[in-house]
Amino acid sequence: QVQLVESGGGLVQAGGSLRLSCAASGRTFRTYAMGWFRQAPGKEREFVAAISRSGGSTSYADSVKGRFTISRDNAKNAVYLQMNSLKPEDTAIYYCAVSPRTGVPVYSNRYNYWGQGTQVTVSS
Image (cartoon, rainbow, N blue to C red):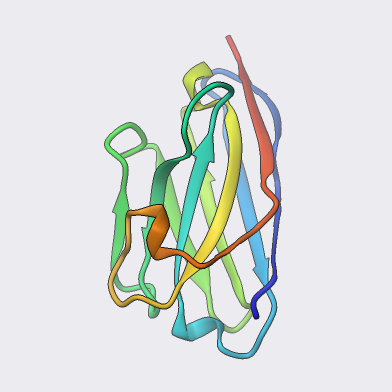
């Protein structure tokens, strides 16, 4: 069992930055790939970014590539999402999730534990 708690969301103007954090419980954090997903009102949950167990590999959705950076600190059982140059279309609830898969899974059904989410709102 893994518990995840996201933080760092909030209201920001377009062009601004936010850094999301996800704290994970459990001693086996380093055995999981980690991912960030988001869900906007009226839309399906979509992949944002993923990072491998060691942090050596990452993957990003095309819509955030070059603006967002995912990282992890296995000593702190934490994963982060640095979001720069935010746009109104980035407004969503952001979720972190864990996957027992190797590599950088991009499909939500590859993840088996999810956090409660943190709201990010970008005003124009």
